[in-house]
Length: 261
Image 1 (cartoon, rainbow, N blue to C red):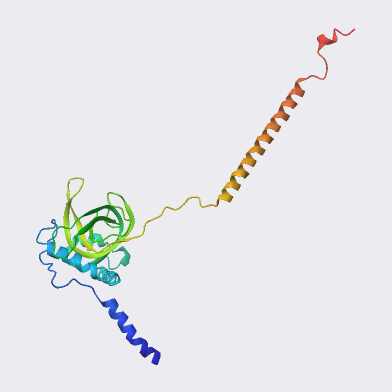
Image 2: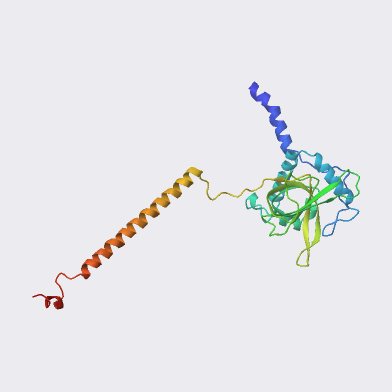
């Protein structure tokens, strides 16, 4: 009983920690943010303010909040509440309901198709460098999500290179427009994060054998080839000898008999 009483405060603390939702500070005004448009000058305050805030938020707390919010969206969905939560189309829901996601944390995973490093421009939050990544998720049907970070993992390539094994947790700001390569105006969720998680995918080796086994196998194959060649040559010799014996008659030809006295 005493042990249970000692554990009770810890259980309460753990539950309160799980229930805690990381929200943006009240001074970050999201009412001026509009969807289906480019980032405007007026939206610079919530844009840079969110980037500064997300740098100081514990990553675990942010991920827990993202999981809780995703669970809420799944439970309230008329189309997907009867399906497994893992099948909930997060990308589609952000496109269809951007105002419901504004200022809320989300976690996305997939592969990057582009990474650009640039100067942040004038701001009051001491942010000097920004990284813009285009993340394609499993449910986005090759349409990218725009990720803006103030830092990236060490060694992550910059440019138009495909980068697998990427996940990110950040705040949804808006649904921004961008010109696609097919000359159409498309929409992409704009996520503001501190950094990304990157686990490079290493190619599996098709042959993983020791040199001794490899050399031994080559030697056995060589011996087998030599034995095969020897038996084949011996067989051909026996066949030739047999044919030669069959071609020599047992009795001499008649014209030779006539020469006998």
